[in-house]
Image (tube, rainbow, N blue to C red; front, side, top):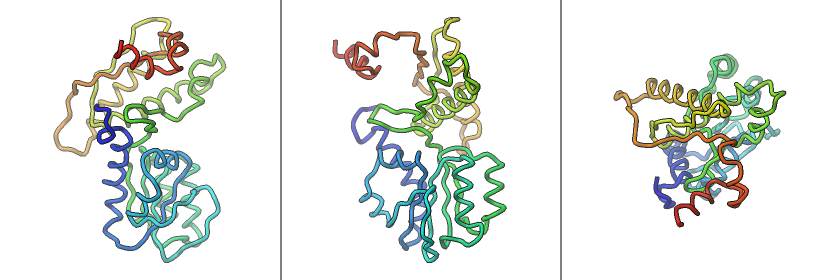
Length: 259
């Protein structure tokens, strides 16, 4: 992918958000409220400004988890992660007395059936749109992203960890989300080494989930492998280089390319 801002990750993510969330709501000329959870707040702050939202007729940005004044004459856009905490907060806005005229609901990733059914049960009549837009990563620069999961290292490598499998599953889902956003179906590679079992597990999870994702894709044409290659590198593969090169593999890559 080119490094220019025109094709950078931030631009691609903002375009994806505009083409889904904003386009759906643009049919109505009235101003709307945008309600975010902590992850989507950080996500939007990396790829757009408040002026960009204002130009799309979004007048207020609110925190999903905080107490908010009802605005029954306005419609609200909910952009949130598919977690029980977020869904419960959404239901609370409509269960007893609706805070808003209607809700446009967008999830960053697949919403489990249990959570979806709870929404449908308690506030289905208030939901105008409910979609999963499949953006579950954090664009940092034109060619840099994170999974925004600072606890993943301890979860995967701690001998006392109880949720290693769940963490690897989550990371795999996030990598698939990245590939889908870039419209890539890459080959997945890792170093075969008995001491680096985590890389093997993650690579197999990503490969299987990619296959499943493109089998279930909305497009009528089944997508084949693209020329892109996804390298899964474990921490133990090269522990010294990040320390010698500004603590990042990105800086190391730039150094090698210029050498």
